[in-house]
Length: 421
Image (cartoon, rainbow, N blue to C red; front, side):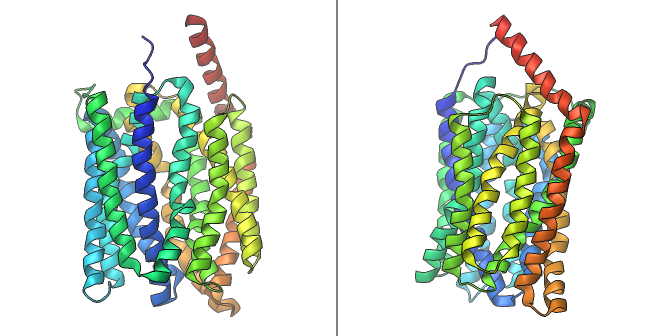
């Protein structure tokens, strides 16, 4: 039976996630500036990012199992709604005279615990809503929503910080959680709840998800490579702000981040309109290699214009890589196992972020002290090194026969489907 298209409902759900992404970006930008100005340490910024990321990583797999057993839209509502509690805690601390590093870590950690419910349920809900032919365009829009925290939030936050303080950013973020819950509730009412499709136990579902992933050797290899890529990109993500803040103010940082992230807007819009039809493995390799080159270029300069140029090109390449990764995995995993498998994939591929957040900030501080040029140039050296390594790993992707087989299987699947239509 052919799946009915629900692209309109997807757009409503996507709009909610877009708004939530903007709100989260305001908080992320504001907290980053606040911590760096208070402590002058890239390691402290990395610590907050790490504590905010760990719950999402550790709870991603069980959240994927829950997404296959319970109402996915309800899980999205719970995750978005309760995530506001951690931000509210930080706001209260700010109201009482300023939040300490410990209080910020606690608030970000609590918010992240509930956010862990979101990713597997959101991706699995996309599968519920869309036909196979709509995945590529949807992926472009999803990439655009994810980029909103880099595209719109920094320039908005930079302006707001020039007329107010971080408390206003936190209030706006809390308000976006409410709007996101409302949009998800509307989709849930129109589409109906997602009933559990399996009666097996939690651990059995977990083992089945791993078994499915392990059975697809190409997917498993691709996910392992992704873990290495996230290591390098995580270093860039955590160190770009202290690198720029070392010679520029908050407004300049906000403008620079927005200009850079507009590259992702360009790439996401292109994919949203045109999509990709073939050559996923080759495009994935080229996109990631170029991203590594542009990352290295980003760290070479202590001038905002070339930084924005290389940052723009870096972000423009990411939607193509994300689209190819998502399509190669999604079309090789059964629909009924999407939630638990995506949870497993998220756990493995994002291990690189843990390593990046754990070591990059400290490495930047040490290099800055050793060279005598400060934490900003120490961060730049780490970014350059990470970009070079990413380019080297990306070149190896097409050499894997198992990864190339994923694209062949996808082509065969689509051909048979068209013949039977």
